[in-house]
Length: 77
Image (cartoon, rainbow, N blue to C red; front, side, top):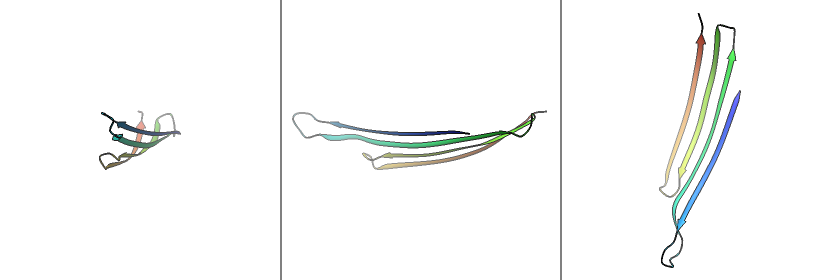
């Protein structure tokens, strides 16, 4: 079993000519992924992979959500 969690956040502000600070970017990202593998025998292996990702761009008011599930099997002859 492998579990990975990532959290990222960034914000940028700029100012010119003595003006007040203005946001030019405001993003956040949260991702977790899990992989489970199992060897049933020498000839048969299998597993499951999942990923959940949420991305937010508050400056552009955009949100993205991604969900992924994969099932795999390996059969050797």
